Length: 331
Image 1 (tube, rainbow, N blue to C red):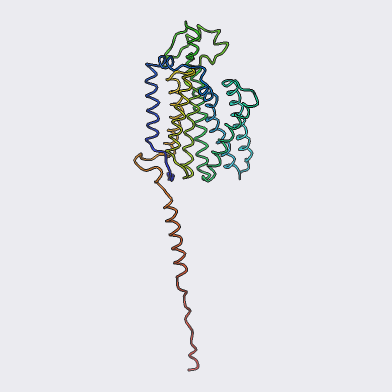
Image 2: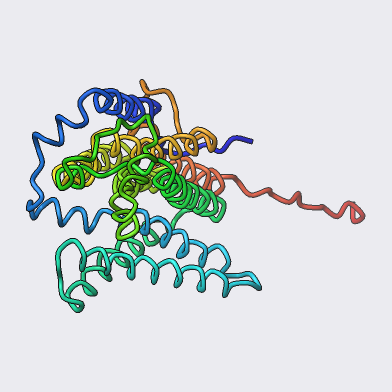
């Protein structure tokens, strides 16, 4: 039986999101190099901060899945598995963000540790708190979607990076004899010609696809909260996620770490997984329906009025009068 939810993610959002990624990939096919040459600014502080913080959303999703697993397994004999999984996910995210801020922002260990702890743990706790009213079945669905989108996209991107071995733009700027290669051609030749550089830092040859764009696209998973709880706006969650994703993608190009095609492919990998999960779990509906008015407060008010009417009907129901037996023997 198909589950019916108070709020849904409109199909128009999912289709438009995929088309945006495809359009950007098409533009990058012809103008990758020219765009990066025009906006390249390696010392932009705002771009470096976003570069340091961009990996966080993927770890938010994994950490939130761990916290929700605690709720799901709370009354089971294997309850401790939820706690172990949650702690491992949160700790892994904090360690990764700690290294990210120390590398990108050149921060000292202590402030980087504090920022990493706040950026990783607080959003996970907020996600878990907002999902507290969801049913056990919906929490299980949410956990599955979070892991498929976050872990699945992460694995796909990391494998693709090693297969494509595309040099980053700032590496091309530093080595004039290194040739630019389009995204649709895996560049094993550059890795072979610059074997010493690859051995010194293989990350120089992991431009395609963008891991930061893959991670920040996990922000769209916040749209699941209104669906499963009936509170909040899916439209607002989708719109804010799209804006933040685009700004972060632009920051990667400003720093010369990626081309337009890199960020668009990283975005597409995560977003397509998210869209597939939404379609498979029937979290979408026709785009012409009003997302926030599909169910509203009038539903609860009507339900309360019906309950009150039933109570009044019970109170007004007349009591049955027992017939009086008369003694006819005396007559």
